[in-house]
Image (cartoon, rainbow, N blue to C red; front, side, top):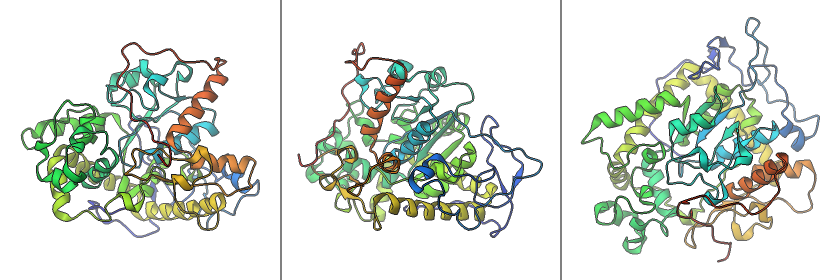
Length: 443
């Protein structure tokens, strides 16, 4: 993925010993393991790989076999995860990884009440009442919400690992401005939908407290439950306090610009296999719907306007690279390279020899047509080759299934599992404003 200023120290070359990443609750042992790419147990093929590649599977990538550490028993996979899905940070791709893991292991996924659609009544503060009763008690949570620590801890079981993801604020703001341009009043006021014009005088367009105003100012801070109207220039202690609150709860803060390295840390934290974090890129905009590069002056203006987000990102980018260093930088990079190679093989097997992202109008499979926020923004997706059927096709379908379709599918499946009749849902008391709806392709 894109660049960003690394704040990591230089560490030893390939071959140094790697350490598992301990979580807040001690899920991972700090005992050193050999610098290898496999999981912290003898390598096995996951059910997903068997579905796509057959029982024999492909031979494991060179260097990926793991010899068990003689004095350290293998850890079981961690099964309870809460992912705070922030906006425009590659969160949909992480969500899909978690949804597929939950399905493979028959775990319950917390899903929103239909009155909230596919988000937990965002932008309201999260409440456990927003969770559909058929999806409680959950093992996994991964849909959009505004963080509320007490409510999440009331919902999720003890021992849940909390993770989230951040993105460089200038790139994230460009994406927010494009994606929500037709819905956020501050963006709609800007002549010619000009990002440069908005950042030249944001106060001329922005009104705190308006519906969807959080998309126009410090969105990361808002998603994390903070006050997005605070400025670290005026109150540095507020930013420091917000950082402490995040560090108290989240065992891992991933960085979107280093997505594969983030997944390596995630899978080590959870003792998952490398196969468990294979992915297809989801919810990506077409090149025509985004800036190829953000000019330096525009990036500085975006970071200045979103100073709280910039402070959060800079801190957690630095701590991310310290975690990479403690794990063994060369080991993490090697495992990320193995992840990319395995991902490319999987995409070819699922979507053809030259897998490409397609506009929604060119995707024949209705279940794979992505959410379209407006006529001015094209969201891309994958399509399945014609004439395929069977377990491998189903696994590939889930790999590229957009959030709205996958959430609906999981809700139906979990309601059947719980013996609930599939009937119209009651409406919540005092429901929030309806979330943004998708446009059908071609409309």
